Image (cartoon, rainbow, N blue to C red; front, top):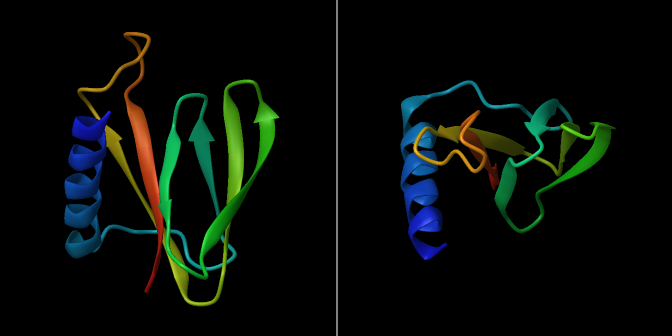
Length: 91
């Protein structure tokens, strides 16, 4: 688990510096059944609602916050679709 978290932090850090298109404050993003939000900065958070057993719709809350998600190609819990990890951070 520590190894997964370390990889996720490195990947998300790279995504933050690469200019990926994150969701902006009060925008929504989807998470799969095994996808995770790993970190929410102080004053930032995401609320999620269930769309189906396999999908969740999440909304970024907080002034001047964004979400950055990254697919972990090597992490396939069921051998199928890669797991996504997300962080909600200040701009």
